[in-house]
Image (cartoon, rainbow over all chains, first blue to last red; front, side, top):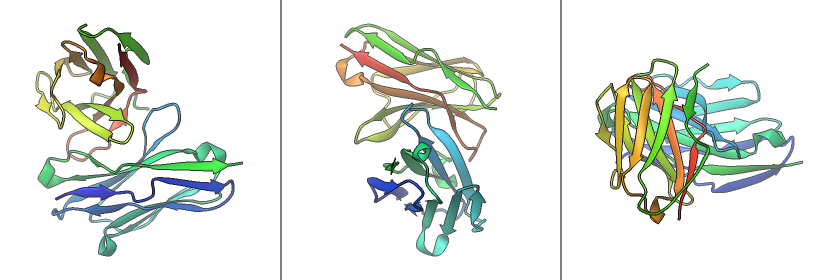
Length: 115
Length: 112
């Protein structure tokens, strides 16, 4: 069955440290999409990235980078030189053709960046 | 920029009241969604809609109904609010198929 696991419930680091948030997924489908969202304390979920199953290229956007590895069914998210404004809950999600592209959400990782 | 707005950020209602939560998106998205978010339970899909006047049940539709009379507007209705419906309600919209969902700011509903 499809599933998204974010094993890290909470991570706390000091500002300027690098931090990686793990995401492991399970799917029966060959066509699927992976997403990361950020939910700051204000509550609004902010879309960060979408990746499809046919594109394993890593992505970098400023201090953010994503490592997609089909061999380990992982889609990890790294923040380089973290800042206090990165403090938020981060969600990984999966959608697959077999499930009509409904989003399956991970439980989220709460990231705390201490000054 | 995609914009999804929700009618209220905070709402307090009494048990038994009929509650309307409104969501409007300005990006001409076909798909719209209603979720609730509770500590320890994550995001759970209540209802979604692929088109005007179409609706599909999500994972937890009991106690809720929805209305989509116009493409840009998706309403969530609590016919008779109960205390276990106290929650954060999030609306989202997306393009068809695997389009990323864009969320509104959320409505924190308290039922007393």
